[in-house]
Length: 228
Image 1 (cartoon, rainbow, N blue to C red):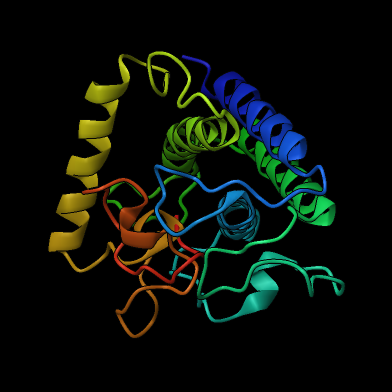
Image 2: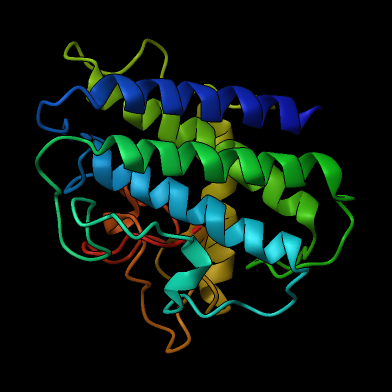
């Protein structure tokens, strides 16, 4: 399966939905991520992409320090962006935030296409390869694309729920949840970046609230944003 093609399609669809919401009106709430608006969701996924691009580009084999905000390449002018903690972030979706997301997603996609998937890098899994992140982030992008479309659509979620590569969404979600649960048991899944713990072992301030969806792995803090 060409996960790179799926990742490309999902990030473009997510960006399109986010740009549609950046129309000067208040950011829509994301029903499947309680306590988040579209701005919070864009910040979360964009931050994950920036973090993992650094991991893969620099061939990091140890967990990065998520308190180091230079990992996320934030522009100087981000005063109207969501904060790493708190929420939901009301007010219009900043166009610059969507631009930042698009640039980071394109950077990560380029790395996924150019780096050997067998290259060893840090992950929260027993499988420590760049290919692991390609698969996981394709799933993450599909789920959050669905989240974004659901928030942007007044009539509710798109028919059929999130469609992910490799099989029906429920089966794929169970597989991800199982992986997250196993990682939690080893003390690895905390906060977001898909279950990336902070150095202290507590939730990252950049993780989805309560896992975004009830029972989702690695999302334990209602005020976090920056975790994979």
